[in-house]
Image (cartoon, rainbow, N blue to C red; front, side, top):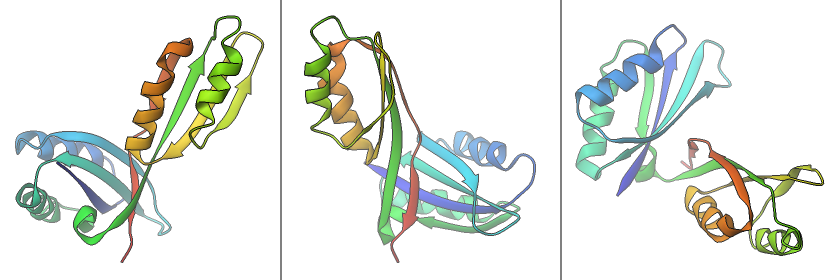
Length: 157
């Protein structure tokens, strides 16, 4: 089981370092992290995906809440959230496989970021499970490289 935790902190040096250090010291298994600006000047938002149950998530929220510079922290899994990741896939399909690759990719929402005669790069955004399913289904089509971002999440309440 995994939990998604949203954290808003005051901008400042070392916020990510302090959060990751806390997660490491307390033995939390971090499966994904994303950081970025918010709509409020002077604040940053971190989205953490950690392994664990309700108890583990509650403990993480309490520990982060105590940190200097924390504005808000919430277990987004418990309150409901929309979570998305992004993935880029680069292929160099063998002759005759190009059409089959595009047919396989049509089963998933995507866009073509770059299409050259020898390679093609697809861009996708969606739930992590959907991206993982796509990656597994197209591995045999000359996959050269794949990269998936950490999660972005917003609570629905």
